[in-house]
Image (cartoon, rainbow, N blue to C red; front, side, top):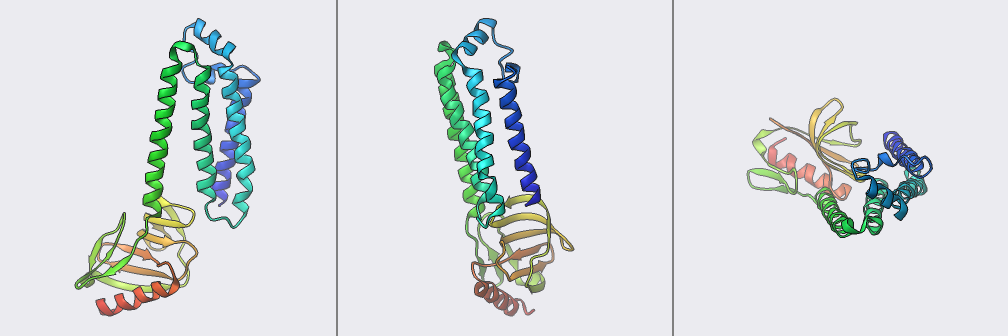
Length: 241
């Protein structure tokens, strides 16, 4: 949480400084491509208020993130998603709006590019969020167990070396390849005292099932403590543990 807070404060400060420099100090060179435009276009953009409104957009983004900052100290589960979601949507929508202040001959192209970018980015984020929050199950088969969903695989019962039911989740130190969301961790992570491990974890929902096979170390829990305990008992029985 401390790292998240530092990151957010850094982003807030960055947007505030950029907006202030553009709006108050007329540092229009900070705008992408502004200096490479013909002098006539630069003057027209300034007359239209394009760079000034861009500066105001940066400051407004900073202010909006400041207003959402108290969520970091609350019990709200989706703090990261709301704060960074606001930032992305507000900025992308803002650049669509700013297209109306472009020079007339480039206005239509600016609308098309900024709108297309909004659709592509929001579609990509939506897809990533869907994968991140997609449900998973531990399925017991005749000779193997399977974890469904993204990052899931199938492992033979014969390959199971150790099964533990843990009251506390060991410290996760580093995300290697996966989704580290507010309420869920899914994918490959470094775990203290265990090394590289596959996580399928709903956070703060003990107990946690630890499964060690010949090649993988896996942490998983269900939607309820009862489901996790059921998986533990079934896997113990199937693997002869």
